[in-house]
Length: 341
Image (cartoon, rainbow, N blue to C red; front, top):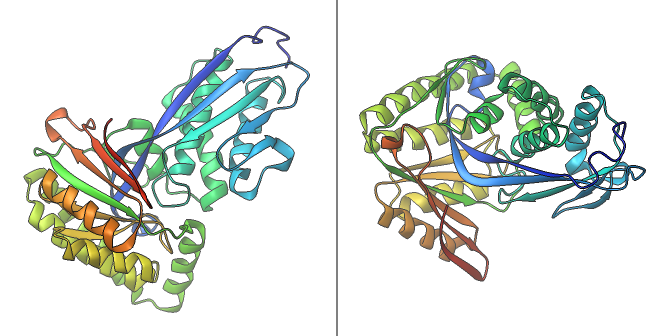
């Protein structure tokens, strides 16, 4: 490290939230709008100083070791780390990175963007540098483009702002302030999502079948309508559009049997509507409940029927978009109970 022993005793920590896409997956790439909400699952990154002569080590749930041996799942993190340190005029030596995440990887919940945001914030803090939102987004884009090809940007912008956002375009977003509290259930299919592959698949499918452009446009119309339903507090109509949204995503070919089964299971359990969330070919589903009691019931029934990890979140519009949340997370054979976030 060029700054010698200055940071020998220094430790910094930063975090970022996850996200769910309420509507607009894939369609946003084709100039359609999207609705995205942050969720109170977080990634925490700690930067600790160590011997200035030591190469950087990463410690995480999936890998602990030196940068040159990281698995494919962390390559984007390494690319971002090296880019950050170089542009900050430092060397990739003399500190270690610790990553702790509540967000399951490759499930459409924004884990890659959240890690990149937390890492960027932590490193800027470690080197005592001021970080603007514009600079943060520019660095996170490096990592996101590695993972998703040309990233839409909706994950990182929602997670940076930590507010529900309506994306009119990939670069223009508006804050959403629902007037009523409402409840989401998220269920993990157990199948790793494949966003980059799904984006490529849809691109080729549209080239081969121009009629799929109508499906993309229908998702855009649904997104606009869902925004209106949120602002008017009409949860029944919102739920209906969520279910129609999932049908569109199935038509695009980005769902899978596990997701379809959970979507249907959530409706049987009383959800007002349900759909896959994220890039697809695996990942999670999102279900809308009309009350806290209903959300808990849907969670329990999905866990009992499918033995999958489930969460429920409440969003209180009176807090001008800020999350007011509780969650229930259930692992197979184990219940962690109710946790106030």
